[in-house]
Length: 125
Image (cartoon, rainbow, N blue to C red; front, side, top):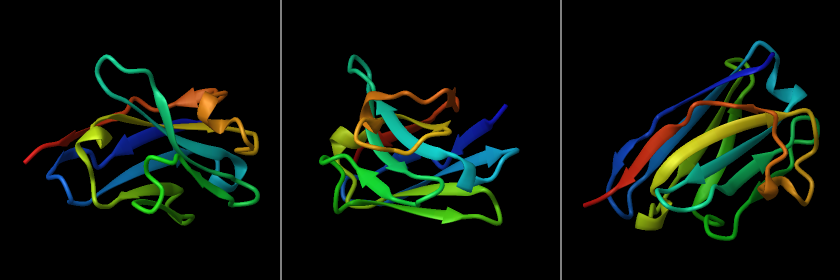
């Protein structure tokens, strides 16, 4: 069973940057599509990004395009979500999720079987 552990959350000022990590075990990143999702209080969970395992294709939600990027360290089996020019609406609990599937066109709807516990991102000046 795959396990995912998020880290790197914290307090960031508007316009600042933060890097979240998603450590995956025991299988390699190439085996899974990894999705990033977030949920703010009182709001529904929303998809932020997805990166395919086999094809490496990367997808971003419109709200974060041009500001967030994805990087992967295969040696550490870790995926990183680099958040730049952070906005107040980026605040929430960020989760990474894994599934043996392509991201496809429906990744934002979920369909991931394994989830981490999340890491909190707070945006405040």
